[in-house]
Figure (spheres, rainbow, N blue to C red):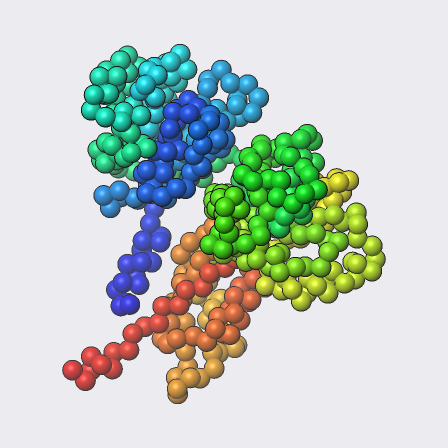
Length: 456
């Protein structure tokens, strides 16, 4: 890679805010199907029943060379109560923080009272609104769209999110509606999203029920009771959180089969949609290979991480001694993750989860200024230089933090770096700056040799 290309990449990573597009509408009109169509992959969970999406979920999207943030929302009913009211509140927050609102209506049903109420709210919001008539699967169904002019939101765009009909024209319209200066207000988010993962029967559903104070998830001693991820809005230590109880992970997706394959796939999606992952381990049992697989998947996802040792009520003094030895030996690769010892059965230390989650999310979003980072790395290299290789001393010429969530650093160097020295830099970054609860990515960009050019 040329120096010019690396600087172009750096400029891209440090670009300003991108436009935010919120997809809203009442339950079961096909919002998540449309999101998947725009993304070109099955990212949002789709199911033939209302209320599957319960929170705002943001995805990175691109069309015609324009990047934007696409926000899928829960079904919006202005008269909702209980959990449905919280879902509606998230949809309204998405509207407030969006640059463009895509309002989806079921063309086969027409404009309902809920759609008309939503249209009035959209009028008051004074946002750029694109009205989408979904489920127009053929040309002869276009006539069903005309009645939607009554909503007063302009021309309805007939599409079939399921089959892709009209989606390209819709995307052209979305991009055309982007403002010159995006608000970039997606960071004004609602409850943080937490995925509970772990091997089967480790107590994920029991912990969720303990936190919620009621039975939100099915609990059984038989492993594998939870198949699909279940979203729950709960309060811990005064803050609202969206907790996702997931199926127990036995194998990686590519090695699973049948029902287990789909459960693993949806669990993987739940982790990808989360901001922080709580990996539950059974404190009463030795750390197993299954636990290691779960931890590897959590770290590779790039999400913030918290370790929760469950069933602490079964841990005696002897087990505590051996557990500490196991943690030092088996979990050294995630020593940076906050640890909480809990008991879903008794409720022990469950309230301590919230501080651990906040700590991990703080590290996940932490940023070091370019000036401070380069001063730090110059001092580090002066005190402990890279070993000489082939009569050359590899050195960092310039460093920058290109991204957060998780932190990603780019090191522009005069030569390739040994993996051990990179581990040393990573360890010192944690020692001097913290970064608790988050993986750190180091990308080395060696400067290309110009010797070949001189001989030409």
